[in-house]
Image (tube, rainbow, N blue to C red; front, side, top):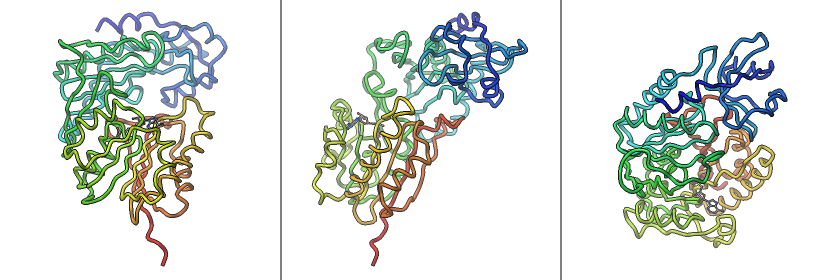
Length: 396
Ligand SMILES: C[S@@+](CC[C@H](N)C(=O)[O-])C[C@H]1O[C@@H](n2cnc3c(N)ncnc32)[C@H](O)[C@@H]1O
């Protein structure tokens, strides 16, 4: 409990203008840089703030971030300082909201940052292991404290801290905060009918992409008996594992990360000879693929290719080219699954871009909604889109 208390005791006073106050009043958890007055230049990255209105009343508390479009992440509203008790209550409520997932899986994102009322901190749990990561300067102590509380509440033996994505400590080593022995390289978990694995110590994200559970669930429940699958940007092949469960006879995984493919081959190929692991840059490999190759399911899940809004037009151009090339390889009545994992591209922009790239040859069969453990509390948090298209029958 002591770690966040120090930061909570010393918030710096900061006066908001009316635009920023309007956001707080509307319960938005972000204040954008262009809504700040110039006095913000004196603030330190990661500084905890008491936020004042023009009448000298405290309207909330937040954390200042020196870089990027978001300048202040709101921790609490109203005059009361956030306390270990109020943050603990947010954490407990987040755990409770996910209770229904337990029957399906023992791998859950227990805390999803400001969407769960604890800005800057994500905690994923895989069986008995919690992985904490912070993405806002000034939240590291809060993250460690939150992970300790999650471990106590859920009876977890191991807590791993991945280094913060930005600010002090970025690039530091992965640390064991709780538990003994070496850092776990492989943690198995169950998800519906699937047995999967994550590498929390050196894998991407917290070790795997928990947010794709909805797509794994969808694929595993289909009948893909005897079908061919092409999984582009496959990472460790969790989606391919779901397709194997559904009966697919041949699954090609393509990714630029050798480590991810080696891990996938070791842990996500229950029937090894149905899988082919291809290390390649998809943007070069796909255009060079034999035009005659046809698959029943083509999955396209590119990485987040934007770090600012002005890159969006370029990214939409790259998506269009990618999806146009990918659809050539979808067989008769086959599926094309289009994913996008950046909130800088809106849902409408993504639907429109993929729709244009597919040129009327496909119909949208299903659009997945975010999983319960990846709540979307405000429009800018809506980062993951998954569209499932089916090729229309040829016109007679
Ligand atoms: C959003 S993740 C994919 C997650 C995956 N669908 C899963 O089920 O876990 C994006 C993946 O793209 C890979 N990647 C990034 N750039 C790439 C490129 N140019 N060519 C191939 N793979 C790339 C990364 O290694 C990462 O595994």
